[in-house]
Image (tube, rainbow, N blue to C red; front, side):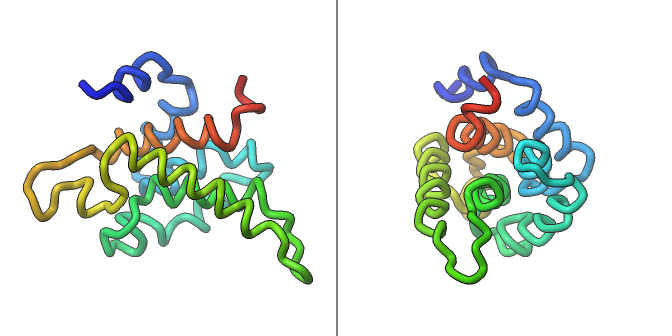
Length: 150
């Protein structure tokens, strides 16, 4: 068992578990993560569900970046963006938050591409979708919502 598996078991917080549970109800990986924290971003879950719908199975079913990661990065924009349409001024800080999420996920799992995580080319999966969702949710909590959940 990986160290971060132990951390997940030890910290199976309500929201981390809710994210994985959403996936079992048919949400894609991005929706599972993003919708779990929609309220903390001040948004309606249905809107976030719609916004994340195209990010499943590695962005449009292309097996690219893991949907759970893209859901967490979507949250980064939702909570960090200033929304300044005339002079966009929060791109750099949102990108830094997204990079922290992606790098944390890479460190935990050794890959960020859905195809690699599922072992499509090797026949040896690195991580299941529910576990990727838990990992991304845990990172979102640590990086984006640490002040709201502690």
